[in-house]
Length: 306
Ligand code: HEC
Ligand code: HEC
Ligand code: HEC
Ligand code: HEC
Ligand code: HEC
Ligand code: HEC
Ligand code: HEC
Ligand code: HEC
Ligand code: HEC
Ligand code: HEC
Image 1 (cartoon, rainbow, N blue to C red):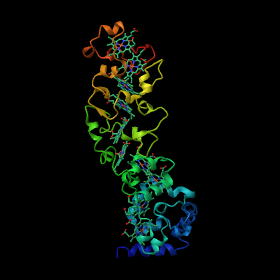
Image 2: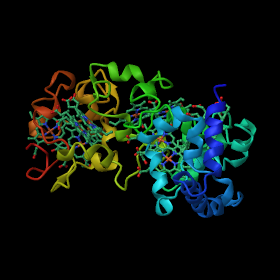
Image 3: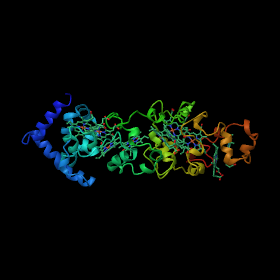
Image 4: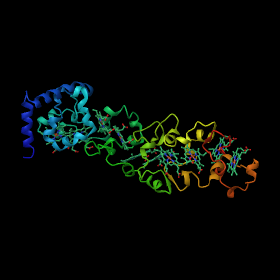
């Protein structure tokens, strides 16, 4: 009984030629040319348009108004397909009274096939997805996005960051609870500020930029330079030569607890200058940065004293 009423409405809709519904049906058929050509398969007349889908899938169709994919309707002079651009042409499904074997059931398809459907339109913005660690591990678009249940205000994600990421990356979570950490849990910084989960040219899904330090200096502009006196460590090793990105027991997210030890990885032993000899004695002498305050580079002093 539940399905009969909409079905009757549908028959009226399909046979009403001069009505608005009839117009929509005709318009719905027109856009298919482009879509069908792209899919290189279906007859344009096999696309019925989302108004037809709405007669039986009222709830889904109503909710779809907020979906960014509703914009698909604006394509091809306002005759673009919405539902059927993902689920494929619906005529056989509808004429079969909702025959589920005659429609693309994306919820039941393989990850690979679903990804291919999405990439049909999104490959332009996510060209590296197929060779990303996520795709290789079988994590597909719908592991993180849900077209019908995702939040349209938040990229259709199934959960917001960082919750979404912690569902699988439990090993990363403790770092963000350390005494010094990027404020990801507090919502100040996002995982996706540094990572592009859709794949990049680098390791660890780190966003690719010409200068890798840019991942950090887009927020920490004061450390970017160029400086008259550059500290070569910053350019050569990059920020991660001295800092850890997620969280650390050490202040300033430093890689090692003792600053002198950090510097001495490259500068040991530093006792040659007068300035240093009075401090010779290593461990208990003041941290190098008490004097070398401009450690990322200076425009005034070659030894980064100021
Ligand atoms: C005549 C009523 C009717 C119309 C019109 C209709 N459907 Fe369906 N559809 C059904 C029924 C019945 C099912 C069976 C599953 C259910 O109960 O939702 C179904 C199932 C589906 C499923 C599979 C759900 C799953 O289990 O994965 C998809 C996808 C779907 N419809 C898409 C569409 C699209 C797209 C359109 C428009 C082109 C459309 N339907 C039009 C009745 C209809
Ligand atoms: C951008 C692609 C896309 C568009 C557009 C789209 N769907 Fe879906 N649909 C999916 C995916 C993917 C699933 C599988 C479930 C999931 O991952 O959320 C799905 C699942 C479904 C289901 C199965 C029930 C469920 O909620 O799991 C139905 C029915 C359905 N869609 C109908 C529609 C209708 C009707 C429209 C148009 C109003 C539509 N879809 C538009 C991608 C799409
Ligand atoms: C027929 C082309 C098409 C297909 C297939 C398609 N999309 Fe989209 N998608 C779009 C368009 C167009 C937009 C709206 C872009 C905009 O707002 O400018 C969009 C928007 C999105 C957004 C939201 C972007 C934002 O900034 O809010 C996400 C996430 C998304 N799509 C994921 C998917 C996933 C996952 C699939 C596969 C299940 C998929 N899309 C399939 C065309 C498509
Ligand atoms: C591991 C989780 C994950 C996977 C897998 C994933 N996404 Fe995303 N996607 C995200 C997150 C998180 C964002 C938000 C990024 C941001 O805010 O900068 C996003 C943003 C988007 C956007 C909107 C912004 C943009 O960059 O264009 C689109 C479109 C999109 N994803 C499509 C896809 C498609 C298509 C696939 C599969 C090929 C996919 N996503 C796979 C997590 C994922
Ligand atoms: C401030 C930038 C930044 C933020 C924010 C960030 N990451 Fe990272 N992440 C990195 C960098 C840089 C690396 C590479 C570390 C290396 O090469 O030693 C990395 C490595 C990783 C790795 C692989 C290595 C490992 O530690 O297991 C995973 C997984 C990861 N991040 C997940 C996340 C998740 C999940 C979030 C959010 C909860 C997040 N990241 C937030 C910069 C960041
Ligand atoms: C459905 C589970 C799942 C979700 C959700 C997920 N990931 Fe992943 N992620 C994986 C798997 C599996 C891998 C590949 C194996 C590995 O390296 O851990 C991976 C790999 C990565 C890597 C590369 C690690 C490396 O060693 O190269 C980063 C970085 C990463 N994910 C970040 C994120 C971020 C950020 C989010 C949230 C926006 C996220 N992931 C959401 C499962 C997931
Ligand atoms: C999206 C912006 C953003 C990005 C990208 C970013 N940071 Fe940060 N960073 C912050 C904010 C915000 C703080 C915290 C200020 C606070 O906690 O008071 C911070 C703090 C720090 C601190 C000081 C911590 C302390 O204890 O005082 C260091 C060091 C740091 N970031 C290094 C990095 C490095 C290295 C990268 C690149 C891997 C990076 N940041 C990327 C926003 C960012
Ligand atoms: C040679 C080691 C080294 C390298 C490389 C390095 N830093 Fe630092 N950084 C330090 C030290 C040491 C401190 C602590 C300074 C202090 O406490 O006065 C620090 C402090 C910081 C701080 C805290 C606020 C401040 O400016 O004192 C930020 C933010 C920061 N670094 C970001 C970066 C970024 C971004 C990069 C890459 C462009 C980078 N660092 C490269 C050693 C380094
Ligand atoms: C990853 C290696 C590395 C680390 C770690 C490092 N430096 Fe350097 N630093 C260099 C290199 C390379 C130079 C270029 C001069 C040279 O070859 O000695 C340099 C130059 C300097 C100079 C200027 C020398 C001159 O000849 O004018 C000072 C001062 C300095 N570093 C201080 C520090 C301090 C303080 C720390 C710890 C916070 C530190 N460095 C950590 C590699 C490093
Ligand atoms: C009490 C202040 C002070 C402390 C602490 C200090 N330096 Fe220096 N350092 C200086 C001054 C001043 C110069 C410039 C000396 C000159 O121009 O002859 C200098 C010069 C340098 C130079 C340039 C080459 C040289 O030897 O002249 C390096 C490298 C250096 N310091 C590294 C370090 C490291 C590494 C530490 C920590 C282990 C450190 N300094 C601790 C004040 C200090």
